[in-house]
Amino acid sequence: MDDTPVGEPLLDVRDLSVVFGGRGRRDVVAVDEVSFSVHAGQHVGLVGESGSGKSVTSLAVMGLLPRRAARTSGQVLYGGRNLLDASEREMSRLRGREIAMVFQDPMSSLNPVVTIGVQLREVLRAHLDVDRAEAQDRAVALLEKVGIPEPGRRVREYPHQLSGGMRQRVLIAIALACEPKLLIADEPTTALDVTIQAQVLEVLKDLVRDTDAALLMITHDLGVVAGLCDDVNVMYSGRIVEAAGRGPLFAQPRHPYTSGLLASIPRLDHPRGTPLTPIPGSPTQTIPWTQGCAFAPRCGNVVDECTTRAPSLERVGDRALRCFNPVAEPAPSPGASP
Image 1 (tube, rainbow, N blue to C red):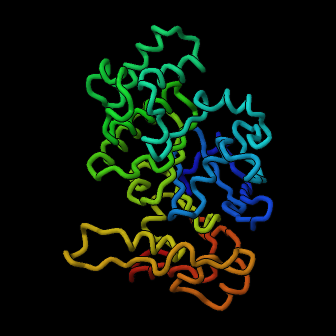
Image 2 (image 1 turned 135 degrees about the vertical axis):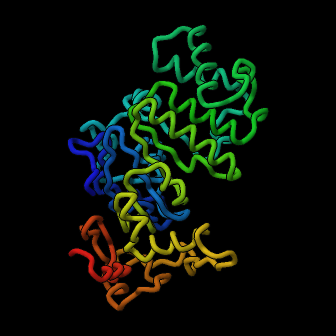
Image 3 (image 1 turned 90 degrees about the horizontal axis):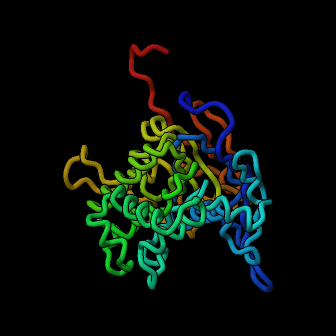
């Protein structure tokens, strides 16, 4: 990827694994040796169906997984510091101030019995040297910045008095209140209608650009990635199966899973009535990565090798790819230069 930033990444995730288990229960590997990086000012997408391990990855980065039920290994380097070794006090200082997160459910993420203004002021006063009056003024300014009408009135209201789109804007305002260096957005448009989705994404895009924050966008929607992200990591069953720049990935997906995700999206340039091509089966139809490729039971490109040993993530041209029989590249047109 020619446009990949140089220098040390702001966030460098190396071989991150998360295993859930407990006494008398079978271990479940939710994230399996995932590696990716985010540079300052860069926008990176983490894409996959529900259950692929995207949200667990983000919670591991934020240090929000239950310590008794989840075992994490690998490294999550932020500014060279491994966050997996950080104490709860250290993580509390980082969360909200340097690393912030927009959660996917605005109703359950906001406290229903506390006004919007109190929740905004709490973040500001916890991390910045401001008094109550200044925090209140900043809270109103933040609501105005994310496009909420009548912010002076809304700051005194409770979450249930706001629409879903407005609650999501409040979460974005809270996340960006202290101008963090890294913003993690976990499905920020879930359960919103298409028009409100577009508005929320535009607000998020503008604010991230204005603050020059790095963005890790977690979503199942490749349309969101197309409009926001520079690099894209596609996850399936806890592992990254393809990683590439936005242009190469959308122009020519090589992994059958990535190709299937793109083929299942309605396209305006196709004739009306053209049937969609969904990925067969469901994400629960997998085989363990220790035995083969987890996508093999649903894959149209499966070969014998896919069910006997696990493919490794290898560099192939302009991307990283985990596949024994990838989607063929289009043949060059006659007369094209080599």
